[in-house]
Length: 178
Image (cartoon, rainbow, N blue to C red; front, side, top):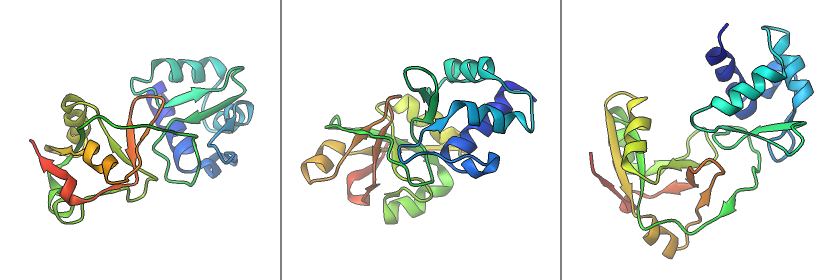
């Protein structure tokens, strides 16, 4: 098993199913590193060096250690209820959301919904949104009138890895740009 497979497994554990390796996350999404390593090691070779390598080389910076590296958590993308202590921020005037062409009809009608995740994920630029959309087939990009949403009372958060998050984006704040 390569590091990529193990990284995907780590994402599953820290964002969705910690019970897969019989560990628990605290209310802020932190997992005990020694329990995590022990749990993953039951099914594949895994140690602290590999964990540090996954965290260091993850191009989306999905994970954070605490100061002494005894705890680790996913920065966002959870489907389980955790409070990753996000900082409320005022968004720029526009943010972007990339998706696949197959989701367009539903988004045009209902807006952006968090579905199985805790938040809708938004990008600060169109290039990132196109990359995200490409993972779901032919990419479509929506421009989100985030400044107007914030003025209208919607809350935005900025995760430590630069992803903008909000609970939902009603359709009237969306325009297709790609």
